[in-house]
Image 1 (cartoon, rainbow, N blue to C red):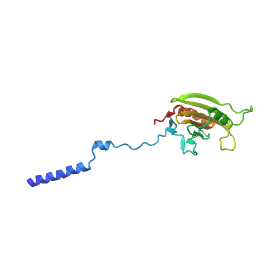
Image 2: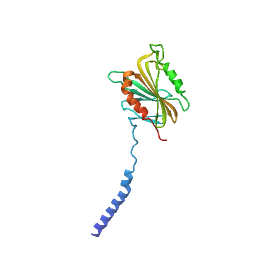
Image 3: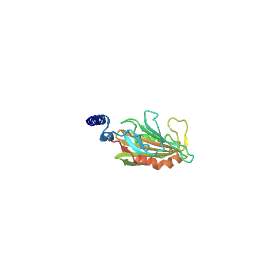
Image 4: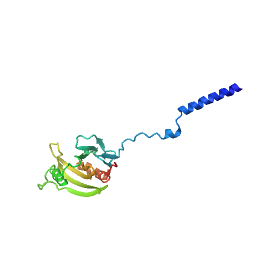
Length: 196
């Protein structure tokens, strides 16, 4: 009987020792940090800013050193895709707003009256950052192309961000731009400075 009791105590001691060495306490297991979150497809992020975006906008890697972000906006009902491009030239680069507007106007075909199209300009603040929104309509020749494309809308938001001027351009066929105008404006009005 004593031998059985001693054997039982030895087995119990071995079991308890094994539990102490191999069992992870519950609070330690639950304190393990969760895996990092994947990028939010409803959020655009560039040069210290974030903004809401549609999940249907297709993000592409920037194609040049002055481009911070590129998105393709699919067309609807057979219309062509449009494009959102974020340009950033550096903290003190990019030229004045007036010089840029003058240059963008020259990228358009003259109107029937022989003049360059007049821009529509709107100014407002988002997250305490001044924004100038410029709109031009007509036949547009994008830099790097050889001809004018008819029926184009060109929207450019110039954001006075902490890093300097950020230029956010939405341009393309009128039908596509107009179908997505409110979503683009929600992106611009939803711009927020990324906490440092």
